[in-house]
Image (cartoon, rainbow, N blue to C red; front, side, top):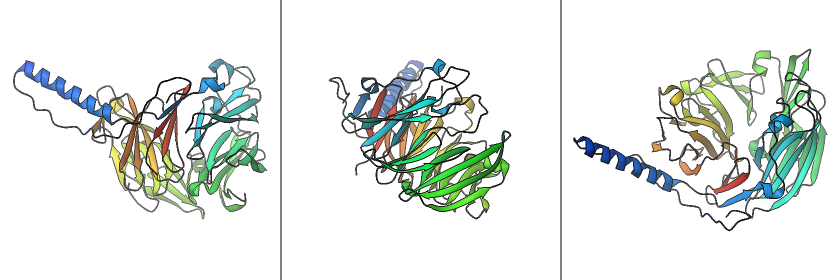
Length: 401
């Protein structure tokens, strides 16, 4: 259903589109006709396998306006919109609008649209102030972010303050972050919040502290200070009480006691090969130049992996970014075909880009959706996937619950 119009699109069941062999004759005309028929058949099967949105929401009807490039300073990572699903029926679309000119960014406002993805209705709008920045190297303030927590709650980081809200938007807790750069991510299925805090002196990083905070009480459950200046600049992923990062020799796991070990050393886990990582209930989801899969925290190689076309160079099929459900049981990979290479996971891509959704436990493919935009979010239990193309919020059913 398209909100604001009479158009309705029903969800199509996931079909099969396995690549089958083409029998070709010896005559050139027959060869051409058979190849053409095979191509049409593959594309028809591939298109039939795609799930269509059960709901399309035109966000311009609710006052959403994309931020213009000449209105903001590029040091704001928030200028692009972000998506979060903090319940199976509610999603947040948010971005930051700066009040300053291009070269000197003034204080901004982060605006969030909280949507009901079952009906397409706007539930409410919320706003938070954000600090200004004056150069691309300024690292005194944190960028504004929103993440999902357990029990249909969400956390907001804005203006050096951490806020916790319930499903109805009531503020539960408020905690000042202080000076320095902070970032956050949910762990333990949203029951805890991993907070990263870094203080720079003279433009150089000193110590980086990681704290695991109980999302219901705001009490610190554990902490770790990393004094390795090189490692501290790596993008750390929290998987329970372990920090995972890309480093020399492959994918590393850094425990809270400071022990650092390699958990995957295959080419798909190499520092130059990995494109994106995400937390799952079965370990770490890895998207690389070679494909997508899951690596157990206590393993040495992926438990399952879906490969892209090998040795295709820049013309290869790409798998980036990836998104996981809050419970860690489902993984959505944004797969884009190359100019010549269009096969992935034994299938031919019907569209330039598609979402492939997998069970993180065994790698079973459970759904395929059109990839109109790489910006997406999954419901906490993986039952829905939403994507945003700059104006329309598309809602897909993934798995039945």
